[in-house]
Structure formats: structure tokens, C-alpha cells
Amino acid sequence: MLTDTQKLAPELAWPVKFSAGEARALVNRRLKQRTDLKATLYHHPFLGLVFQGQQHRPGWLSSMVRTQQRVELVRAHVLVDLVGGRAYLSDAWKTEDFVALNPGDEPNLISDPEPQVDEATAIGAARSILAGVVLRRRKITAIGALELVETPLRLGKPNWWVTDQSDNGSVEVIVDGITGKHYAFSA
Image (cartoon, helix red, strand yellow):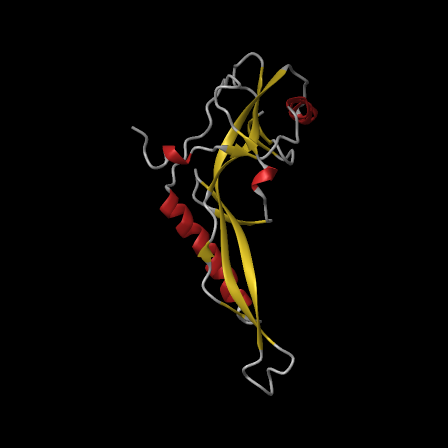
């Protein structure tokens, strides 16, 4: 039986833009001595949420006539890290921007991290970050309640786990599969 967090395993992912070869080359450039490296792809789980609300902007006559206000729809895209629970504002996306993940297609030498945060907690984290944004923007214009308007997307962010070929653990680096940023565990 699947738990609530296991049901949030990624179905879609951002396409890989930074290849395994580029990840290995990046890490080798940072090492004092070049070594044979291997790069293994895994996907970090995120929940993609889209919220919408109404923004009331005063019209040019609003100082004279209080009833003149324009209403605009405001959309906010939020990504929630399903391992750590942190929410991030994001650029807008379309479902077509992602590729389908088929777990059986490629043999994974390492498993993707398991989601640790359930959907309700992730939505709460997203609402918290949006509340802070709305409070800051209210100084300029009023924004009504933001509602979840699309089905949450279970997304995977591609990362490369770069290690030395000998598996002795002397090199362990995570390289972002989209941007090429890297995070060393040991090197």
C-alpha cells in the first residue's frame, strides 16, 4: 500500500539541459587531480502549484471617484520541495514544458529521493510564501484571496550524482541537470 508521500513521486520532469558528460567535465575541472568519473541521473521531487486571485488597481480617477477600479487576474506559480518542504516562487510553466518520467525506461543505479512532505503540507507551504508576497504587494494594490486553480503537478528536477569510478566515495558531487550548478559532498 502506498503512503500519501509515495503517491507524490514525480510523473513529469524538466528536460535535462546539462548532460552527463558536461557534469563529469565540470567536476573534473574542480578537482586537483583528474579522475575517471561516472554520472548517474536522478530526479528530486517537487510539487508544482498554480494559484490565482484578483488584483484591484485604482483607476486614474480613483482619487476622485472611489468606484473606479480595474480588476486584473493574478497568477502565481509555486514549487514545493517534497523532501525539505520549502516553497519557492517560480516562473510560469506549461505542462508541455516537461517530459514524462517512465521509471522502467532507464535502470537507476541510485533511487530518486522519496517525498517526505504530503500534499496538504506542501500546499500550506505554498500558501505561506504567497501570504508574504501578498502582504508586501498590498502596499501598492489590494490582492484578493489566492485560490489553487490547477491540479498539482508531480515534478522531478534532474540532477547528476557524480562519483569516482572506484566507488571509494572520495568524490561525491550533485550537479543540477538544468543549470549546471554543483554541490559537493566530498571531493
